[in-house]
Length: 149
Length: 202
Picture 1 (cartoon, rainbow over the protein chains, first blue to last red):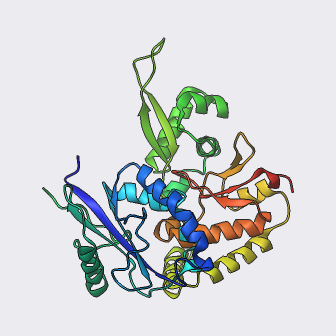
Picture 2: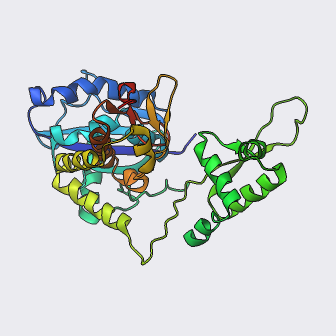
Picture 3: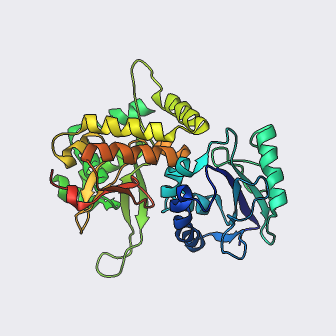
């Protein structure tokens, strides 16, 4: 088993309230996409509340939704993001979300027996936005390997 | 490097060997190549190994099942994932595409990019669907239920760095080209778009 897991945070600013008609297609896709993530080999964990997803949690701003997940490897995350039905909501994200003009996705390594907190995730995104990619906070375009033992 | 790789295809028989290998979904053996191209097994092996040396093919050893001839693993060949391009004088459209994709991402103007791609597809439309897709480098084939699948992504490198945008543009371009019945259905390799059977004859 891997000693480290990959934590991933991505955030999005809603164009309209989550329960508005403009967001209906996004909300309708959520259960399928979340289920798909869970069935992807290498999936470990995702943040959710009692409703089954994390869309009601707004730790950063009232109109910013968060997605916090943990994976065994970059390959497993990549397979889910780019090579599954997740591609359809990615293609349509501008229908639902306004551009943030800055990094909206951050990756970092965590010890395999731990889970990330939303507080830590926010700090990692800040770090990426402030200093650019580093081993502590990176992106899928600027990967950093898991720490040595 | 790319120049040598492409130069390796100048010999007509070797080129026929290469074209057969890349037309197959799975890796192929020397025997299959010899039979398909109509040459001896030794000559097929010679050309396959030259193509592998040039970086155009990857090799793997297949575990063999039992029966006569079992024991020695068969060497299998498939297209290498490496890209080779030669442009004279030097041009770098890929770097430019990467920068433009990042700018679209930053500005949030994906819908404009999709609209432009759809228009471009419509401009390229006319004639049979399959030959049009072949000419654009998609390497189309029909699966059992007559859905057209595309073995190759012509925009692979930028699709890797900007998947939402590039796959969305690709979908829009193909929608414009074939006039509907296209959808995203990504698999582990190849293009993420499929074309449903209603469109096979047009």
